[in-house]
Image (cartoon, rainbow over all chains, first blue to last red; front, top):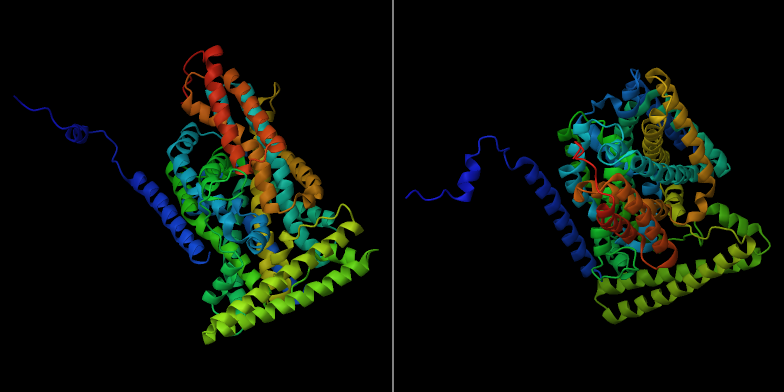
Length: 49
Length: 567
């Protein structure tokens, strides 16, 4: 019996699937930068409270 | 008031800005060029134009003032912006670019119907027309103070300067002028930052300045407490700010118009994401500049009231004696406070904790006396003129610049403030004209031809300039301008964003359902404003969520007839 291919394999088999990534990575960079900024400002606030 | 060198720098910069924009836009021939710059702008231009549009003169005059008065807390207003940029890049921006719309309200007719488009466009025209008055008022105030003219006259002069550039050059002139203006602005603010730091007392470094600001409660950048009535905290910024910025960048034509100058969704998205990366740090530094001005004024004399015209009226009016007594008490208390703060620094440097504490207590007591004296002075001002504006936040940074920065730099800062004013006003007037033409005039039963529409577009720009100049006459009564402009936007943004959100979230909603839902959402926002203590950032959430929910319910009564191709 041939086992069912894994879900991830099935996805990579699709030839016309757009490359996951470039924009998702850009979005992630923007959001991570926001989190870092908020944490830094929070530290500044707490230090001078 | 202004020195000759500053006047030359100011006039030279203004002439160069207008000339540059018009020269770059000399090939404007048709309506598409005039409204969306022929859709050829590269991503750095889109990013600069988007940032310049939001960074009005209000930002550069009122934000340092806001920092001086209320510390860094206002930075939280921008926390939702990067999230909004990401969501817009994934949803509305690709859609607008695919449909090749000129205004975002065109999309609403394709998805819903004509009356929904008209409603959203009308809400935009009213809101943005009034806001244009505020953005025009801020720099007019500067010009009025330094030239000693009436603020109404300076409003008209500035309006004429801006309208000239747009009528001649259209959207292309706006984009090119933005790039140059924004560069001047950021360079000048950085220079001002360095100069304020250098003006601190000898031996006082950046760290010491932060300690002084911190002990006065000005380094309050992040407030994690949840309080619906407080204007700025982490939650209001992230959630309320997200809704406000979604609406501003995604459904306000003054921004959508900038985003649509890009040739593709790819370029538009890059521009918006750059904005998302830079906005929060930029606002943080502008507020910090205000905080540093506060620290600088702790060690040197400051006026009891920063609005010179108001102070002069009170000092020469029937309550002059009270005013002068309050002013004398203010100066003496402030001198005492500065002396105590110096003692505290010296005691801290020697490791004398008890001495530092005693000096700190004396400084706080003197500060309390100064605050009481200021209240007395404001009382004298109100007694002189019951309609006087007693909020001087917008004058603080300007006063510091005029009295402390060297010749030449003052002219440059003033030019930056004007550049910022022209930036936003240009985008606003250009977008008001686009919306009037595309969403109103083009849909008239007897539509003018394209050549005539270019003339109509210029006429619409003129009309909205006159409207903005008219409203600007009342803008002085609205308190801190940076808050006023956002409170005004928040009155309308929720319902408009709700209409667009319904297009995505409620597939079966018809035009009638969303139209009625938007009216309910708008009524709820007005009720929040008039009847509840709910702070303005939350109005955006209320308006948007209510519009979507009511549209979803009404969709059962008024279902969508057939699938529209747009979504």
